[in-house]
Length: 85
Image (cartoon, rainbow, N blue to C red; front, side, top):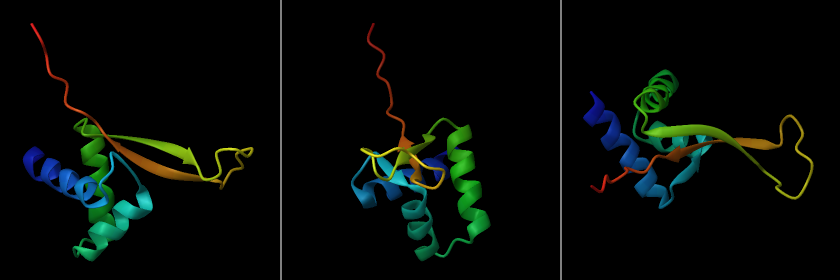
């Protein structure tokens, strides 16, 4: 199951050519692939639980005071760490 989730996560971030995407972009991509809203939510929750992504918020207008609706939920792909001995 982890491999399937990791493959899907890699695909969406590769599609947008970024390590940070909005929840809206994530949903748009997987809706186009035929997933339901519930399946998409399950995918990102599982990806977060398996430590593949981090979920946060990002202001829509960074130079202004942030109001309650002036932000995007974003997903950031976690990088694999290489252990050097």
